[in-house]
Length: 394
Image (tube, rainbow, N blue to C red):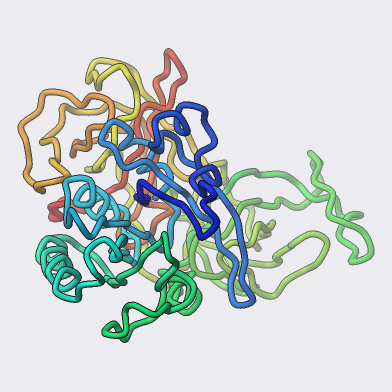
């Protein structure tokens, strides 16, 4: 998430230009916006989201981290654990990023000292113990000289763990955080002409009075198979899956990430935003309000009297946002009294909706536990939020 202030390789090239795409970033030597870069090794493909560390750009860091499966926090070995690094780890915890790699950089400037590394590691572990972090990894390195970045180098013999790239290639990423919990939000309801049902031709979706209804969407969690009994939320109506289509084929099962068309055995009133779940599995809650932690992204502060809408999965619902219960100090983890939330603030509040929605706490399902807030007048996206259980105290 953070990055070193110097990214110079062996030949003196300024590697910061790889991710610093804005002129202002190059002139000031800081990261302002989120830069996405792609690379691959023989073992794995990677997407890097280089995000800014300064408090002024917290919203950018939340945006870049929201889909991450692993975060790398760069720490200057000369300075140790600073406010910026505390903020990074706190946000990683809020967003439930399963792996946090603390890369203690510039070890060449502290004489490759194991004592310096262990001191920073101990301080970091103490701070992280107050957060909900899955796996925490520590690597000493020198980005300038290359030690422990790709190869082990010649200066850190006392460190027995993997180099950074080796860890990135081998760390276990659970790509389905809830394998037994189907979450299929409906994006589109249409009808399939009977003539389009042959295997020789692609599915054509049309408005046909005598056609079969198909419910299009992406499997956000779990899997669904032909014959499964599903419950449609928020109505609670039940049916069985008759057919699954992934153009141009029929499938027996669809898994997380598959965008498919599902047909049910029964004609049920289903619309965009409804959610398919397995009938015999733990169901999400269906309510007209929930508690959430939000990062405010707009220059205009939170106004409880203003009209907002919440985009949750595939639906938009009008909403009222309460005054914040508190503003979170992401460096000290203290709860501050606040009447509103300004840009880059993170706070907890209650969201009241015009109609019921099916939701999970973010810690159980990312996709059904996350949302964005849109200002109905300006149409700006003003906040991003995660839903929390009432008993949770993030």
